[in-house]
Image (spheres, rainbow, N blue to C red):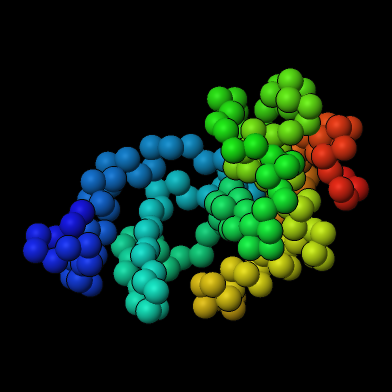
Length: 192
């Protein structure tokens, strides 16, 4: 949305109004989705929460709804992990594609047809390869946390131990994806 007569740049009032309008527009949809019940710790998450925030380069923050409540980022971390890996070079593109998959995020099907190369970094197989790439520089989890803390200015960002334990306890398919890619030589580190 471009405010009339001001070109691309909007004022803080414009941004706040836009966030309020978006919040009003999505309000009927909040709570209609389903929580990720295949991970027990996530199955207990309150589905009626909604928050959205915009952070400007000068540090100004604008938010609506539950934007100040901590939450588990889950698959959103894939974007940040990829950004961190790409900041160190573009070698990951020899190990993961840049095409839509058309299959579920945790599918094994395409990997076999494409010799263990995931279609993109945002499906689980692709995210595993990106994390494996990041691990060549040391502790991938700590590198990601450091990156997120620095970029957000929030030193309190951390791994939720309950969610992490629940994820690990129910990660059979992700392990299968990693082992399958390892069988094609597309994992550089041992699969835990």
